Length: 91
Figure 1 (spheres, rainbow, N blue to C red):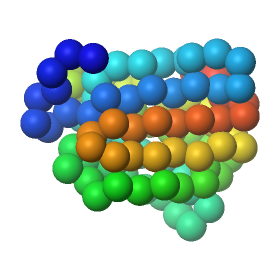
Figure 2 (cartoon, rainbow, N blue to C red):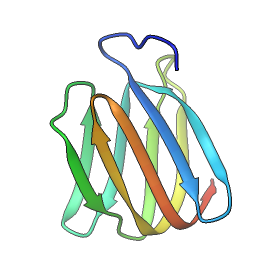
Figure 3 (cartoon, helix red, strand yellow):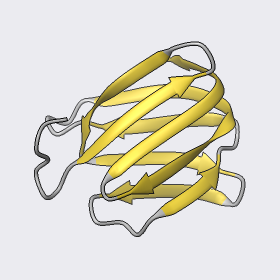
């Protein structure tokens, strides 16, 4: 993994059978069982259970990657975000 800008996240999105997307991002927004969460660089460590819905990843150049995900979780620690879903696809 390359050195991250202080305002960037390293994000990996995987499903049960494939890695869907990996790269650098400025922001990740996802639905959890207790509500929507937005993650930026420097966010405190978090572990959340995904609700069925869309995970939106905004890359450093402003592109938005959308992933439909269900049955999984997301975690963030040290600006590394991992989204693991039982079923997921890029939309």
